[in-house]
Length: 394
Image 1 (spheres, helix red, strand yellow):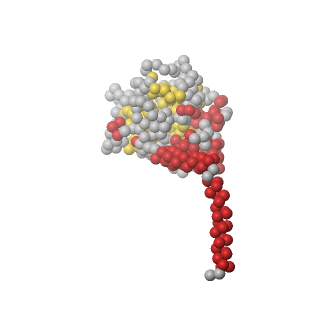
Image 2 (cartoon, helix red, strand yellow):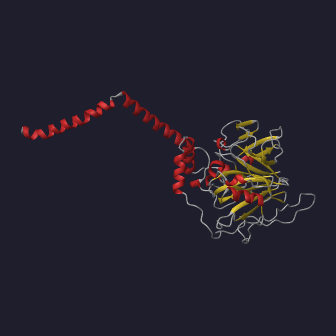
Image 3 (cartoon, rainbow, N blue to C red):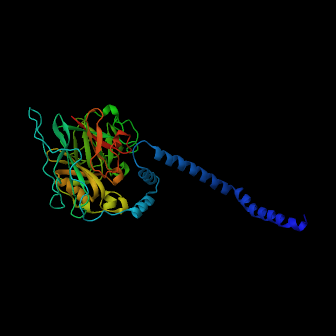
């Protein structure tokens, strides 16, 4: 082969060396090596951290786990932007797509007599949406204690605008039920709480209902207390769900009326009251996102939940889609609450389940009260990332 024939190959190798030289020189620089090492460390940390979030115990969806991981690592604005882009506002008008009777429930029957408490049926819940649809606002029995109705539920349309959406209201008779506060694995986090972050198989006898807690403690404007331990700070003026050692609960403002005593087993604080002395305060209409929680798409009408207490001591829980703080408060007030507070918001955290004993009283079957509820009915049969309340027969 002639020298002329070798020239292109030699020239190509020389060109390759010239191109490769600067790259090799770049990789020998200490600053570049340090940056590459940091990138590798970051990738390993990210894989470990995200993997731990995705494989943690519980029933949280992948999307909610990723969103919570991002918010915990100062990426909340990116999550909010994504929610804003994908958010679909609730439609206006229309009719509900399902019957307004609780699944598997029945109308209340007469009290049993024989010295046992008689059935205390709440007054019909009047919908703000106008003339009631069949079954709307009529209480039906979800659970009994010794044959006496103890847990009632009903469905209503929450306002006259979003009439195709249905909220659920539950009324619990404290003469017949007792309440237990449970911690969450991540919030309030691990500690010697004396209560597990789940309802284990050995603790399901007499279980009647479960429902979600409030915001993450660092965003709740208050604290969490259980069996002598506290996360956050129990704050005067904060709306509080207070658990007593005899199984009763109360709802109100933390301060002179509600405070820590030897009879208090647990306290779950969240924001400010949305019903106070029977009145819905004007603050429910102000500073919606900064004062009442960051919502999907920055909207006012989203999934919300709340709990309150009536003058005669019944506990009322309300939740549903397309609720503003005002409509949530209005429903709790219409159900007779003289004190009430908002709990958690957005679909990933909404939970109300009732439990059917059927042929296995020690292992009752959980049922979601609202069919559109995102969380599975067995959510609290698995370890929960957030705190929650369990309701048992006395």
